[in-house]
Image (cartoon, rainbow, N blue to C red; front, side, top):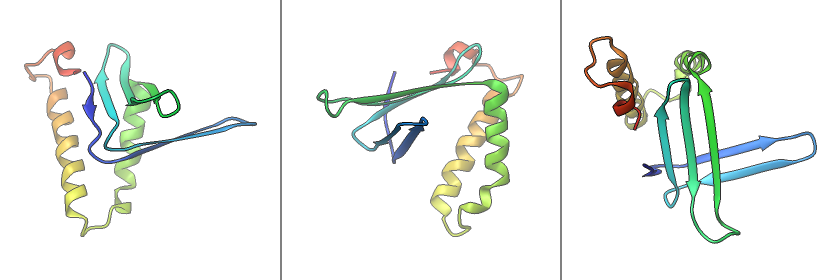
Length: 113
């Protein structure tokens, strides 16, 4: 099930001879969930053929854990007075932490959507 993108995402894919850049904003949708192997993320912008675009990424758990660790080490990039973004990130990280607790009552399949 996809949800509206609440902010904005930019994606760049670079090859030796090509560069693809896409922006996803409020008219786009996203899906993020866990599966048996890792994290799945889809960004989707519906529309006419010339406007439609989609990005799908899958990160195995170890890589995603390393990404989260790197984010934690670079949190200083979010200014201390940017309370709204800091609170949103903290609340989402806390929700993930609590969902991963062994005593969490929600099974993986139900949590993943």
